[in-house]
Length: 288
Image (cartoon, rainbow, N blue to C red):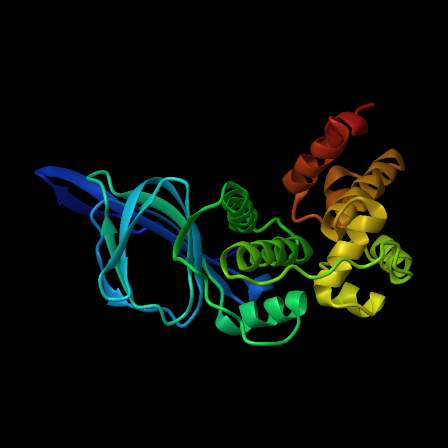
């Protein structure tokens, strides 16, 4: 995570009571510096404006009153997914006295176009049908990406993968794109990619690097690799790192040495992933 703004607190009056409008921003270098926003707005009102980039997010609590296309109004209540294409003029404010809490990300049009073309093939990228939809699966995927970027421990490979999955889902379900046709599993390039991950497990690899090794597009790589090995590349890489850490600890390496050598952000990150995979901590293994 590259944090560019801390919580910005400011007292606001709501019918005689004091409230707080709070916002936090950070960027994701793996997504071209895409800005991520986590905010709790009680009285914040936005005048008519538009974004040069996409605005994608989720309403976690409360309600945002959203006005677009002149006078069209929708109430973005808790559970809503926001899908706002570039250039859509809109305004917004609290739809309830309690305001709303949401998580947003603002990927550039160039980044989205690049990923969408990679998934669906070249052609004009359509606009979303509505700026607010109910889609629990897409909601959870956006929430997971948001949480993955906020602590800086998530790999480039995982962030890029989560973003590609979100955009595929959003444009198929809410922009009318046709899902790409299925390819035959067990593409011969998948063994090359698997071996490349095993040999370069400590590096912060990106999807394009793996796709180049396989001779496929990035999204073809994701689908083919999961079909062949049951996990997307970033999840497979986590498993490789866990196995390498286990071997290093058994050979006498310290926990800090093992975490660094295996490519984890830090020792706590290593421990989280280790427990998720094996059910016990690397410290317990070291004290065997």
